[in-house]
Every structure is written in structure tokens, then in C-alpha cells.
Length: 347
Image 1 (cartoon, rainbow, N blue to C red):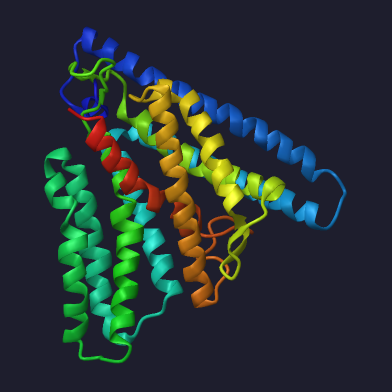
Image 2: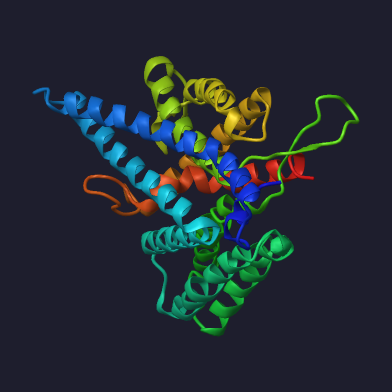
């Protein structure tokens, strides 16, 4: 099958080049769709910002325009990744992970005795995770356990060697959580590029059919659905929200918003199934799963920020939140999406 990794292999014959171009067509169409949507949203945001109204409405418009800027940056990242091919995408996600982990550690202060442990986390385990992913799916047995097993055991042991016992368990847990969320979980998004994807058989007992598409479109599909799920959740919470999930953590998130988002995001995912190896009903289910995990990730990060007494983890663009605030939903949904895809849609 034509895979994203094929774009960085040996020089292709004219027939292979034609096949690669055909496999990239859904990716280009998906990017074009996102580009058109963002263009329309930017124009709408500009017209709304010209209205001379103050108060809550003006605040919402301002946040909407800031969010559009963030999405433009994400689109630029995917466009650069498409130009740089597979390794470029892995490097870009590594940089995002590094930045997000820095924000997490800054938000949860550590002691002097943790500095050498943090050196290992930032400059050994984080690069190692992405190097293993960059080496390909043959290293799945390694990158799937290096952080949850070896790094998780190394962190408290290295902190103990420093000899600082004050709040030892809390400090170790903070570093472990940051590494797990910002690096390990997020790294499953670029790992999608190496899966040998197939379509499920229509008839029971039939062989799975190799998917001829490009894995990059699956990764874009995942990130797009994860981001749209939060937009849908906020919209449903505003128009139909009644039952707040956890008022002391986030008073704007409701059960009705989550349920509405599951349905609406699932429908959108089904409509975009042409860019994936999923049939429409499978894409709809995947959209629902991503929505649940994205909502859980955002709520979890809100709880952490409440505990630390901060509003945002950092500043990505003027007036908006940090990198981790933008990808917390992706971090929680990425490993689940990856493993469900790997279990049901690979040979």
C-alpha cells in the first residue's frame, strides 16, 4: 500500500509517483477544506470585530478571533510537515511536546533537587521517545513502554539520589504526569504515520483490504476532530447546557455539551470518512471516542490549573492560552485513537 513513509524512500518510478500523488489527493482535499473553513471563519471574525459593541459579546468575539489565529498556526504546522515529509512531522511534534512539557513543569514548580531529574526528562527521555517513533513502526515495542515503564521508575529513583525528601511523592508525581501527558501521549499522533492501514471487510470472514490512502490525512483527521469536538461541546453547553459536570473545576462544561458534541462531532467525522480507512459509521464511532477523551483531557487540565492557581499554562499568541492549553484534548485522545486504529485497522 502507499504509505506516508513512502514519500521519503528511494526515487520512485513514474507509476509509483502517480500512485503517491493519488494517495495524497485526500490529504490535499482535507487541507483545502480546513483552509476554506478557516478563511470563512476569519472573515466572519473580522466583520464581527468591527461591530462597536462592548461587554460579554465583545469578549467572546475577541476569544474567537484568537482561537482562529491558533488554528491558522496549526494549519501551518501541518503544511510544513507535508513539505518536510514524515521525519519533519515527527520533529515538529517533538518541538510541540518539548514546549508543552516546559509549560507543565513551569506551572508545577519543583525543588532544586529535581533539576538533574528534569535534565534527563527534557534532554534524554523526550528526544528518545521521538527518535524511536522516527525509526518506524518496527520500534513500537520500545516507544510504547520506554516512558510508562522505564522513565516512570527512573524519575523517583533519580530524585531520591538527590537526597531531598520534602514533598518527594508529590514532586515525583508532577514530573511523571508531565512526561506522560505532554510527551508519551502526544507522541502517538505522529506514530499514526507508520501504521499499515487496512479497511475492514464488508463480509464476515473476508480478508482485510489494504488502504491506498496516505496516513497523513488520518493524522489530520484526528487532530481536526479533536479540536472540533471542543467547539461543539462549548456550543451545546451554551445553547442546551443544564447539568454542570464539575462546577468547582469548570462551570461552563456540561453533560449536555459532551453528549451533544459526541453526536455532532460523530456526524462530522462520518462526513470526512473519505479521507480515512474508516467507513462512515466507523468514522462516526471514532469521532465519538475522540470527543470523550478530548473532553476528559480538557477537564483534567482544568483541574490541574485550578490546583496550581493559574488560568493558563502559558501564552501562545497575544491574549490566548499556552501550547498545552491548545493540545490537552489531543494529548488525551491521541493514544486511544492510535491503539483503536492499530487494533482494528491494521493487518
